[in-house]
Length: 209
Image (cartoon, rainbow, N blue to C red):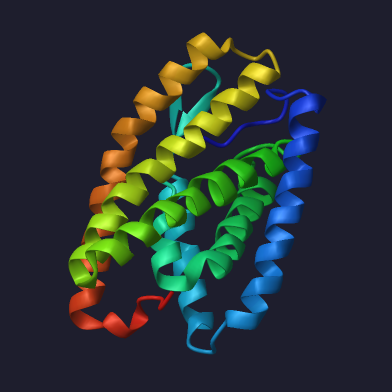
């Protein structure tokens, strides 16, 4: 899902940069108010995990790649605001050190994965968790939100590619969505398994919303 340089035109990557800067700036301000000391080392661990998960790329027709996101897992452990910082830092490191995703398109990658995908997943997870309650609500909410976060991010990526004329929406949207619906199943299983294990051994690590 990392979009490389040259795939987006100015009318797509400039607005993406502006939205991302505004969104991450807001999350940074909110995180400073809610961040707890015990969350600092957890942010480091989550950064390493998300980095490793997202480095497992494979090509998808339409001009981009597919991979796991780890956004909803970060939301459940760190909350919606610190999570945004972790995902953004991972994307910046991948861009500048590993050339995974372009510099001009970094704003779009942040928008897709950190804002649309992960924050969209949080907005799905939170009401499900609240309605069902308990550990069942957490696990069911995580599974659905993790799957949806991958699909939402792929939709945003497809729209940006279509706006730029890289690939027609009628081609890139079905390819991206269908491919990431399958990837989302893996995301849901892995995220649910990890959180299920944490609920058994360290339930105190689950972020209290």
